[in-house]
Image (cartoon, rainbow, N blue to C red; front, side, top):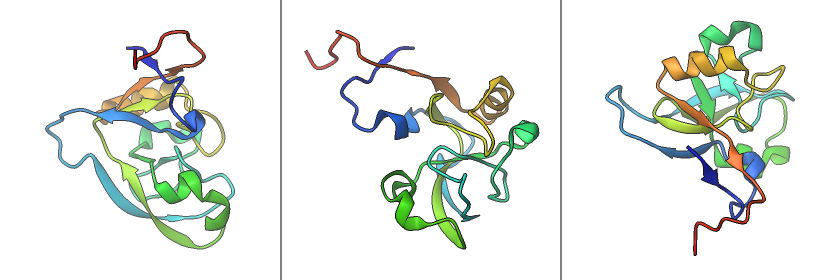
Length: 133
């Protein structure tokens, strides 16, 4: 599936290109996270809300998609805790943005999140195709 995102502002921060019907419950939730320098929009989390390193890909449960982390990250800071909105399942994720604490999502991370009901794609940037014409 190709998404023509030339006209999407802040392409590097869009986590979900949309959701689709799943029978497993809520598509979004809110969890408390411990802030760190690596926690950001698109971070993969464990079920307990802790940030996930690539070596623990099988424990992937959520992906952060929160307005405060997307547009006000510097103001949020790197210490303390904060409630953030997370995607739980049923979303088409931007593979260019989803990330572990130590590197960009890899095939193991994608496989773990696909098992949770997510799908992946990457934006097509700088094309001559306009979806609005």
